[in-house]
Image 1 (cartoon, one colour):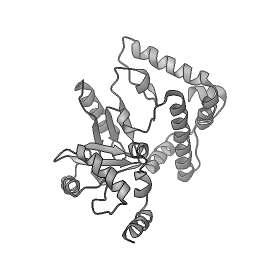
Image 2 (cartoon, helix red, strand yellow):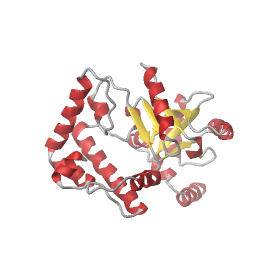
Image 3 (cartoon, rainbow, N blue to C red):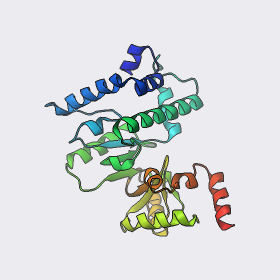
Length: 254
């Protein structure tokens, strides 16, 4: 945002400029790497610092797109970032994320939306700031970890354990389900939702929903990025709204 202000551009415009002006990313990357090597523990709020600082605890905060837009609208508008409506904010944030994702994939060959890149993933949609801070601090104090940690609100998990998928997708989900952990909530990530596809996980989900807990630990089996790499568009078939799912279900039954 500071660079955008210097350029007299919005945050989205500055991201587009950075696609053709490599000096912008070099400036940001150099500062992140320098701070990461310094003697002072530092918290980075950044899309790419996790890639620049080797020994960092890499935390990825998720949020439902509409809730993200509402949070932006609650902030004081600036010349760099200003939206007139919830719809405009939702679309603007989506486009900005798309531009950043494309730019970083081109320059660093990494996908910032691939959850496998991060040590800790937290869905912040229905959670207060204090709880998020306490959770991340606790994860940091644990030190070295052997596996990724996913924290999510069970209210935001979609149960598709009885949904009939095309054979190509079923083969993929059966393959990655071999990495499931008994008794854990094993989930797939089809942005912006987490989804369960096995009856065993439906039982776990219903138990967690009954407990009224806000955030629960889950085991990530795969996400839409992994599925795409395998040529299976899991997020597309799951869709983001019920009508699409119903249409897909009817086609499968036919």
